[in-house]
Image 1 (cartoon, rainbow over the protein chains, first blue to last red):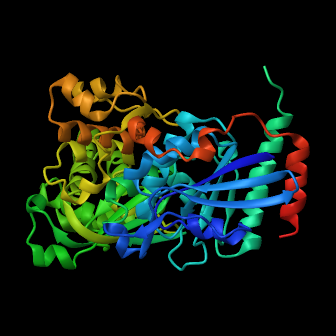
Image 2: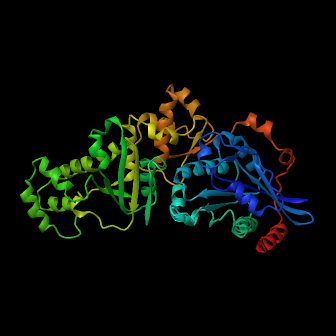
Image 3: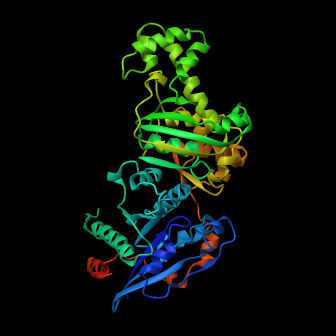
Length: 182
Length: 284
């Protein structure tokens, strides 16, 4: 079986579990537990280890999706997941500026450990208080959009939208293939 | 462009960093809903007051606590450098599109030193005092005319105001959640290395931004309280010198590794695989 491993990361409330559920063909294996800390104000359950989803698109080909916990106290899981990933997508809730710094921290963590292709998915862009994509990118430290990774809008509840985001990731991997190796 | 929210979510240093790094022009209005002890103004007055900070391409060009465009005139009159009637007359003579301070200097009515003092009082001290805000809301509007009558003609990158503002800050309660974790390390920010002068401790911490040494170890090495190092690290982060990198706990990682991943290799993905996947995703 040929498997591509994609990590879905991002801060609490970005829509990682929803994203995986919307595209996975199997019942997502989750490790959601009742949130007991400040996360409880945002949602009733939170991922404590990982979410796992799968897309099998051939008899011997599958995409595995691994969702990281958003909270920093579970950052040991980020390490495990990113080291085995072929690519990652970082979801950022555009309506929650309080999480921009956390998204930046998570991204620094991932980039320190892995040079795999990545895409930024902006979620909750339909919310009234959502920041414009360009401004979120600046808040994430991407001051020059021409040097930023691809940024896409994602409605994590919509399989088609999540699928489009996955296609952006695949395109990144394809481009990485085309780059000459030294 | 309009951005609004609460300082508890996106703190004033972070807003200033964003406006600086995004080279934004416009007006930032801040309305307090609670002030720290050092703000130096009666709370009832302060709470109903708005504070205004104008930006041009990421640089702060003026600040005021009223939007009547007379703040600079009041400051000059208070210092008895000119009386208000004379200043009113000069306002009518100031060419449109010129900073009032620059106009007064061109008429040899104010010196460069006097303008620098006015700018420091109007902008740097006023904004630094706002770092004491316990809570409040902000709104940034990108389409406003520069406040020519409030302008000395001088400007400063927002980061030049953040650094002294945070150095002087006593009450960090609003920023406590923003401080980098004691187990995090720092790496150099490759996108921006600002031309700001760091003090000795800041330069020492900056010298240890190797992405491996946690802040608690830096604190030990520098014989400083951990909180002091966290505050220094925060200053380096919001002024664009460094980025925080969380360091994972390796021991815990081994214990919780899913078996499926444990056995996974790190071989690349074939182009044919990606093409097939792309075709599949296209049909979702």
